[in-house]
Length: 314
Image 1: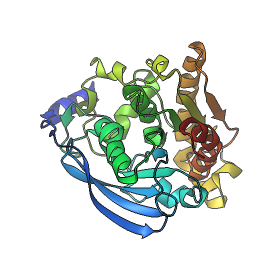
Image 2 (image 1 turned 120 degrees about the horizontal axis):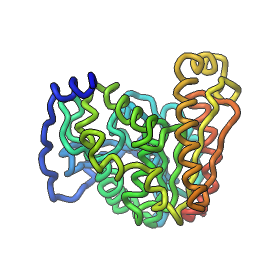
Image 3 (image 1 turned 135 degrees about the vertical axis):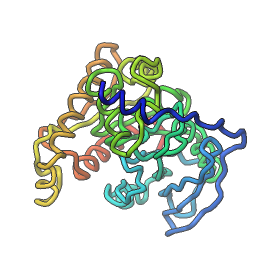
């Protein structure tokens, strides 16, 4: 009740209508022969969003794409697969375009019903399922075969995006996140994360009785993932070698352990739902691992052979 009162006092601000223009690349900077920084204008949000793209030398045409969404800071805080996840080394020589966007902090990577005084206009479902892939396909002359992953905050949303855009992604991976929006932990996560960014969480899908909370629940809508390659993962929350060195292990004992334990509970719920529906998937539950880049990177590497097969990486 107290939270609702605070939110009511903040008020809801109606968002402006999205423009009709097509998304387009407005800038390309070549960081190295294998890394490009592209800037894409989003008509839905009337702003430019940057993404690193890892690709083979020469940018050969006809390759599939793997979109790796960032965590709670939207990679705008410098914490990202690009800076922390070892992807530059791992994907070197692989015949795939790896797209690492920088945007969507604290937004749950969805389309918000209303603009927010802190986060502004959020139309991330539109951007990540339509605008960015269309721009990437044109610029890199891709095969059109795509996979999607999310980590931490974006793990559950990645599953939702794969549901909302069923023809866009052949495979989806959710690393150490909280699938679900209407169960207690899912509702808590989808409220607390926007609040952490100073936003009003009810500018997202309205109050809890709004049908959009159910519409975007991957657990409730898990049946719509049938036929896709699905990878789920979470650690136990116990610090261990998977986290990395002593510094990472120690850091995991102060918050990362609790976050990962919550992720395990949420991800187990998602896996159980898929099992009940008879939908094939892989759920990697490690005996150790806090909410660390050591854990995320290990599970990304484990998921890659499945993802590569699904999108036809040669």
